[in-house]
Length: 378
Ligand code: GLN
Image 1 (spheres, rainbow, N blue to C red):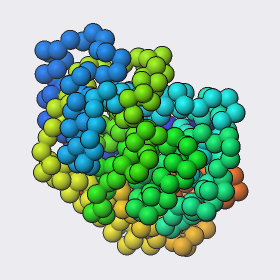
Image 2 (cartoon, rainbow, N blue to C red; image 1 turned 45 degrees about the vertical axis):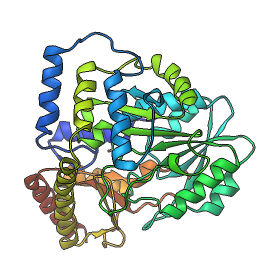
Image 3 (tube, rainbow, N blue to C red; image 1 turned 45 degrees about the horizontal axis):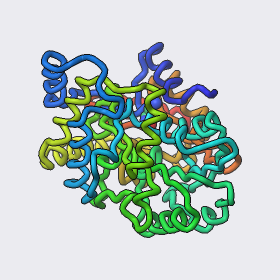
Image 4 (cartoon, rainbow, N blue to C red; image 1 turned 60 degrees about the horizontal axis):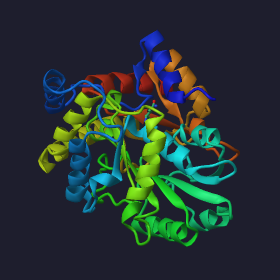
């Protein structure tokens, strides 16, 4: 199996002390409400195995959260708590993909998708999206569907592009899934990290999709607590039960204190989530302005903790991998080359991703280093 680009870049940072704008995680003060809730749960609640599908309080809190924020009407029987979004993906793929099944992936694709599909015996069928807008080519999607296609994986909002699918694109994808009886695994872990003012809409809510969608969510992204590894899948009760069977042989369950804390966190008022988003938006604008001021051409962004820059348009004569390798070694800043999230000939070779969810001083220091680095290259 390939080594993930995120771990590769973070290991280089640990060795060299470079600033890590590669792997996506906020580094700053974690939300005190969540930390206090986890401390209380550790002191007062059981530390023994919780139910494999998650504690009932968290499964209910997930339903209440989505009722409030996305207008979904869910039953706790539709929720399986997992050890993060990646385990949710693994459980869903293991439950749904069998030997020889074709699975449609849009590229850039989060690096776990294709290796998990192949481990399950499936065959990834890649559909590349193109910068700077990363629109979904519905005609190409329709042409890619064969009698062996079973599953489609959709990441919306899209990491690393930082864009959201339009209502029309979602409608088109949903219609094709329903017409061809595909199950959609929807990695929606960035649902709360959107800045375009567009309310998040899950594929789950489109006609014919309630029984053929697996929606994946992550407390790591919702609260900026990526190391907690608390996530979940939502699916029709029967589908959820099948995924629960796969999950029981992966991690079986997830630390109970963290489940209790996330259940409390999901009940925080909307104003709390709005304030968190305002903080992220300010960091995003700070890095965007600094990069643009240093001559980097930053692509449009509507969501996620990431900004992408086009190296060729910025006058930088390096491909993305060379830039990332040299930036970490010479400028002391880690980035992610987007071609690492593509397979095949259509990978763009000129785009790198920067994670902006960092304290101001870190962003300012990184931007200064990147400015000098570009200056030296151009
Ligand atoms: N989701 C994170 C990112 O895109 C990476 C997670 C991981 O390292 N496994 O940066």
